[in-house]
Amino acid sequence: DALHNLLDGLAVAAAFIADVRLGIGAWLAVAAHEVPQELGEFAVLVHGGWSPKRALLFNVLSASSFLIGGLVAHSVSARIDVTLLLPFSAGGFVYVAASDLVPEVKRTHGVRANAFHLGAFMTGIALLYVLRAAFEG
Image (cartoon, rainbow, N blue to C red; front, side, top):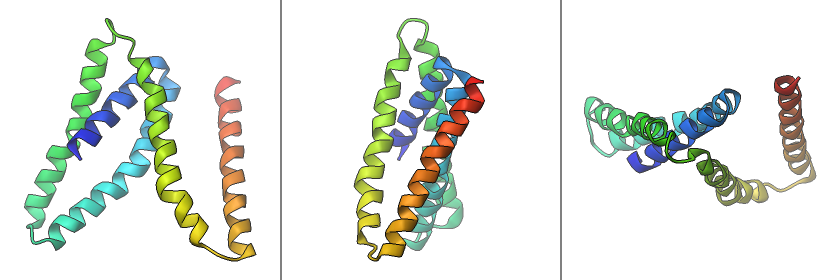
């Protein structure tokens, strides 16, 4: 998890270095998947017999590598084009969607469920276009 958070920190910092608006979007995307993940990891540790205090301490230590990744990306950005990390970060999100979310959607049967998923997908695409127009305008 610490390595995962380190890589997220590198990616978010690279996005901020490329453009502040892109950085905000990347940070929101990472937060949207990190918050539930960290809560889940905390629950697994406590359920596995760890005290809540110890589980929280290890979660905070692991999560702090996000900051380290951001600082590393920022410190080397003068010598290395860290924005080259952005396609890898985007690919990671596509991978998560393809490997975790798509199979789950395929398990749902019925025309109503499929129509709902298609509508949610199209709403997401429309939202991306609206945000693009808002930030470019």
